[in-house]
Length: 303
Image 1: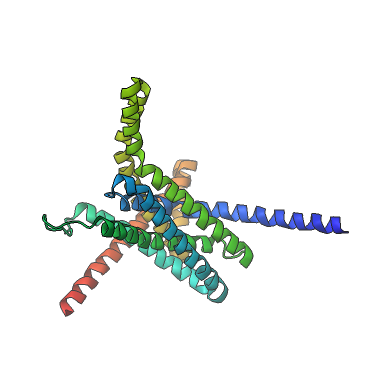
Image 2: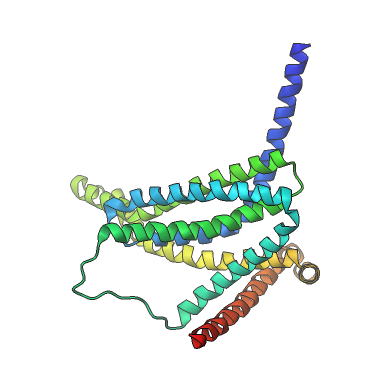
């Protein structure tokens, strides 16, 4: 009897773990688009810090990210229990925010903007500068972590509370370790390149020299690619959230997908919804940016 009960318990645990693994895989795919932006923004946040302080800064931001998710995961679970109807509106707001951030990046790229500058004679407090960098990165992480958690919650909304909690925890841990592990590697690419170049001079190793030069050349280009991919991901993910949450837009997306499939077979079926979501994200983002500019001018005129 005891042996049978133990086997039943093991079977239940295996089934639970299999369900969690499946839901985590689906949630990871849903949130993957946000990670390009998360990775690019956090890698950019730690630039400008002294080389020997880069890894401590990344670790400080990673700890802040874990704290963010320790706040967000219970909050998301409480919403799923007490206010489940709030999940879709939160997803819509999150989608609009992603579109807005993407559009703001495009505006900042092509339109002139003012930057704060310091006096030439002013001494820069490096400790305070580092603290501000860490705080800014943690604030950015909180916003993007909220997006990831809400998208994940929407993915597992039909599951039991235990499964929801476990999937949210798995996603939170994997995303944090993955993002900040990659950030640490990216910010140290140039150091690795310099190290290999110095080693090649001592040992006259041509392979190390070529690899070192390659890493030094790749580091800035990788940052540029991540920034571009992050912006594109914002429009795709934000537009995708809007198209799936608003029935009329979802109907239009299905029609576009059907047309793409009939014209270009399997390729059109894959690309058509991506193009639709991307264009929707761009339009939504531009609309929110325009509204934001109008609102800013109104509030300034009042003061």
